[in-house]
Amino acid sequence: MRNNIVHIGAGELTYEIRAIVEIAEKLQHLGIKTNMENIGDPIAKGEKIPEWMKAIVADLAMKDCSYGYCATKGLLETREFLAEANNKRGKAQITAEDIIFFNGLGDAIQKVYGLLRREARVIGPSPTYSTHSSGEASHAGQKPVSYRLDPDNNWYPDLDDLRLSVKYNPAISGILIINPDNPTGAVYPERILKEMVAIAREFDLFIICDEIYHNIVYNGEATKPISDLIGDVPAIAMKGISKELPWPGARCGWIEVYNADKDPMFQRYIQSILDSKMVEVCSTTLPQKAIPPIMSHPEYPKYLEERKIRYEKFSNLAYDILKEVPGIKANRTNGAFYMSVVFERGKLTGGQSLPIENPEVKSLVEGLVGEPGVSLDKRFVYYLLASTGICVVPISSFCTPELGFRITLLERNEKEFVRIFKTIGKAITDYLGS
Image (cartoon, rainbow, N blue to C red):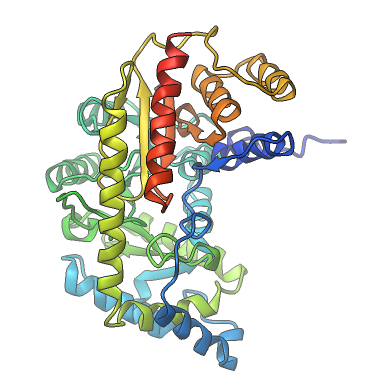
């Protein structure tokens, strides 16, 4: 090219959660039967949408108005519904004007980071969901800045690390919180959230809180929406229907903005997000129309509770199996539907392997693990996939120095679920002993 046309942050756009699928597909062509435990899509794992919910969507699909544009911020009646729900539950009061819809939270994340001044950084958790870390790093054209989540303390944030990172990096302008957390499944108690808000207030920062899994909490844990605790600190809460209904294919998420009027610069920043959305005209109409009738349906609370009970049962099955495996740290999942497992330091080496019967598969994997820069946990993930057919995601791809893997809890067949986790446990033991 005559000129360099590549964005300065292009190298930061990575998404191993889907990248691993390409390897799995190659192995499938070579005869390996796979269990895809890499991506948080309940529908792909057999989640059954109730008939009453389908009937609402089907009825809306028969209405001509569902096929047109909506307001740039989103349907007014839906935003009013969500604002009222927040105001009944949270202390920070908002109106419909404080809500903006996007084509899924992926769209929201790219705009929220992409419209920051390049020098302004948002510090996020480590490990963190790849879309957040990639979006923030790409906007800045630099590696992500992060605070540590502690696998020896329920994956809770290391608040001392957060405070020191903020104190000594004046470029940090915001704090990202994911609660319940992806990829760890941790649920943050109120005391931790309060301290994170206090740090933001002390250093004059704003907060982004991804609450996409807020209504999927179990094992007796409890948390608070950021709107309950934010006080006068400017903040953005990210929400959506992809995991809760679940309807990931709808690509329908929104942000709720708190305290925009408390800071003129934050208010101008939010306006720039809206202006960017206006250039696109609007977000998808039909899913927005479905939100009030679905979430206000008398069956909805019961439906959510049934799902939480199932995730709770499977989180405990997984934990009870893996907590007995030497050489790893396994925490019980208390929210969302992921489990992150890390290897104890020094347990992984570059010479470990698992038996692979198919010579073509073995050749492919040995080529992959022999590539320069392959992390030790990705090496394990490749061998696990080739040897057992179980596809997980290396935890190092979630912006962390920890080595391990993330797996979903979405397999619905209990017998198959137990088999998968027992197989992983044995594979870990065999791998570390090889």
